[in-house]
Image 1: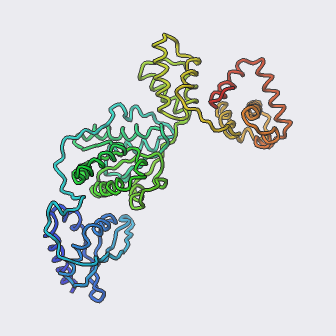
Image 2: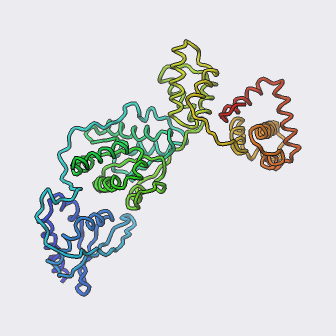
Image 3: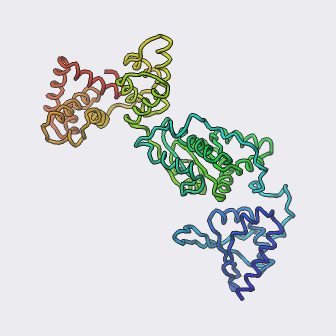
Length: 469
């Protein structure tokens, strides 16, 4: 009996094959595995290799499948899918297929009635990848804030579409290096695999192209073009949050590329869960590969980036100026590069040396200063970082000279830059009383009058706050 049911399923596939293109049949129907037929329930159980294939079949071919089942099994036959949701662990999920209100014989297949996401794309033409050849892994300086995304990026470039990092979703604040990283992946991949169709596109440009395609009634050509890409890199996808039609179109492009093992790389200023306006079906796809955060570079990485740029451009900038810029750039790589370019221009035009005075002038004009008020935590972080001690050292009862100095400076700066009373400052810095705070402030003020080196250290810390004394 099972053999007979298998023959009925083959007849069902034969009918489907007569009504779709060969490429569509091989892509969507050939992977389906017949499991069994329940004569009492009139249910055909089939297995499909992924939820994506199930969703596509239900969205585009439910009428065709219902018609072929009725012809091959029973006029009331229905489908049940067994979805492979985790192939490694053998996890499956059974889902009832939808049944259309009416089941008519399919119309003859023509170009006019094919789905907008047809897979018989035009022959790929020569493609400009739109990559910046200067944004490479060599110029992307590694640090604690970007080590994981950079390492994963190199792996993807060397093995596009063949790693578990597909899609690769990178997010982080503006200026942290997202565009540089995803561009470097494309440049490296194109260098290793010249025949691959690699394309970098901003979300804004993609949306403009889609809008033009709708106006000109060439949406199929637009979709087919993007479905021919081997590595698709899309930047700033948060801009699609208010564009549901663009997102729906990208959903079909994404599904097609992902199913064929093509590499997808996405960048945003926020993680997938914070992309308001994006439907769950797309969010789950964004999250099924690897989500990596690019954090703002810390001071040391900023110093390394600046030194690398100076070496590359043949610039000579004093170490104290480098450190000042690193502390002042708000952790933005763009700000770092902008300040260096401005310093170089001013130095050439006015034939002047690059010194601290010039750097301070540039910073005021080039870097947006944070306007939120300083907190005790901000002050402690900067002072401890400057002297290389921990907050636990400051809060301890230890009377070691270096710990006492950091404690006194923190109290002095807290009184100077916050509106907190001495009693509150003492409570937040190790549970001291107000008299300890007053004594610390007095000791710092007296030392500033006679110790120029100490004065310069305090100035350096205050500059890191990006506030005037």
